[in-house]
Length: 343
Length: 157
Image (tube, rainbow over all chains, first blue to last red):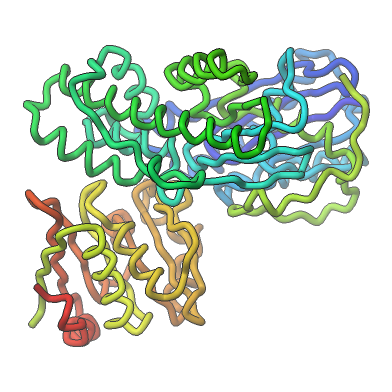
């Protein structure tokens, strides 16, 4: 059985083929970042139009590359939310139409469940139960994962998501928008003792985050400098230290509260090197296991969607009505109906 | 009085201004919010939503473009048009449906929707001060003037 996965929730067009016994066969990703850089961010309607142009040629290319005939595909999986509604509709329509044409079932996948299970694409893979830290442009959540679809939100950001805080801080420092990755790059050259930012909400009990106030702190610090490259790097460093420290403290707390011994990182921000290194050091020190996928599976991709679908074959639908959910809390998911045995 | 200027000393004061906005508008109107990143636009909206009885997470709509709330019996919509490249994209979002509703529409980056959006009843401009923030409230039409007249006294410094 081979699942074709389709991801179009934001500005990345992704297709993947996942074999139930052999694992991931291959995946392709087209990023619209260059298109959107001209406009300073993702432009929802441009994103939808780009998905329309790219998606079917990418499916054909992947099948050709992997020497797979469409008749060998058993399921089509697609991201049904959360995300930009226009972008989601393109992926859902194409996926449902292909499934209808090929007379096979389709599976609607929650984008964040895709991220959350992505570390299981790697070896060694985590096993249930574990604590997952989902950090991306739209999400910052700590989740107790007891099984596929059995998720308990332990804490989340009350305002800006971590990735959003990176992008906005980058903009305040004149690094353009979205400039999160650029900010992380220059932070590596910053002096961590030059500025000290507060660690929001670490003095309060609980596992919620708040990153919005760091913008004010950045602005105040930036205005007090001569705004040269050194100050920029130092403030970037202080900001990144504050975010990484805060996340680290909350992760330790979540592991303590649940008693779980495995921490899984997922979502675009989990590709942040400083975050990975800090948590790796803490994991070694405290004796828990840390898992995160390779960089290409941290950011949006279709491999994680096809992979998540392998756990949700019981949710496959043959009818061709569909809906997408721009807002879709992870906690609303139901446990997977059956768990197929696969590698 | 066509405009009103308030000094907001801290986050609580920004929340209080949000609550005052809810009370003065009675939950109906098109309100433009202007100010740099981090000047407190979302904080003000949070204050308004808390006053409306909403206790959940109030996140900035930068990524989602619009965050809907329904705590006061009809819609409160928090828009951020920062990522619009062309005002025409408002048509795809279904902006007309939002504007026709009896609702409170809070709009960040309204200039990105110029040409497709009517004049805001009220424009709130937030700016950084040495301490806290300055909030300037400007009426765009007679309804906006009415809102300013109803602005609760205790929040005027």
